[in-house]
Image (cartoon, rainbow, N blue to C red; front, side, top):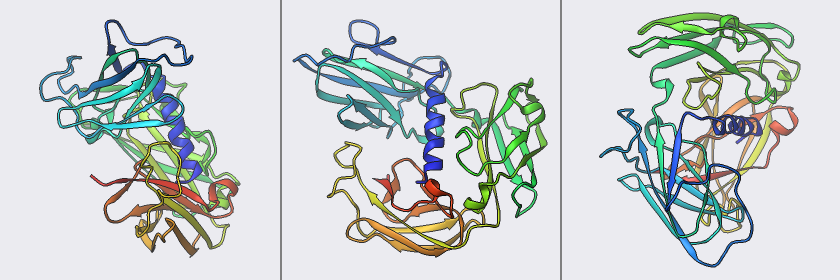
Length: 358
């Protein structure tokens, strides 16, 4: 995965952690930790963390029969390692034999687009119980598409984009604004964007039930786009500052500059959950395709060697997606790389985690 995308995920996760719209509750003879916690040395008695992760389909704020979410990954961390669990068919999980101390609990990879609450801290001093309430994403109702109006741009040129927002729901959505370039300018994103009524200092736009609207956006191609051989516009759309569950889109176009190049990386399966690629965790024999993201075409395939290493040579400059074949998926759902001269973002030697495919 490129540093550009990884940092975008971190920015989105940070925004999600500020959200107050989702809830998680803990029960162990009293309320769960909600304020500052004491991360001092653990005491002796072990305990457990169990819980229910449910999708609040009827919006009543309570877990009803049949609302448990299966297959949700749960990471429990005390700073020195990660214990992993996964919810069963009823949405429940249990992790036992935990030394008494404070743990961070993070649920992710919910099925069918359910939006999960942010991570939280739990003091384990016995048997602790959590309930995580997930909600449907705004993208169920609001859809977005964006595209540059030209295939290629020069550095310094003003690029034009066509954006279409559509409300598929049964009620109007008001105050919709654009959150663009949440990575903070680290990629080849257009600069000086003109967003009109979609800007954060504007009132936002309203989409009536069943209606769609088309907007023209503009931005300037930055000098660094030549090193990426591409320019991009990455935006999400919704009525608030928290982008979790908002429809998110990316447009890309080519920018002349960089020539062909090579890259390599390694794929591993973090079996012990310590967030480190150990020597015995690299995965051999995984076939991986490199997909030109602008052309949406597979341009090369390769297979990892005995050390989990894969290599692509003489690829045209630009952005690429990786796609594993066989019984694997990427740990974070997506991986990409860039061929070009964009220093950190284009460097080889990336490591990407794998998980067994469902």
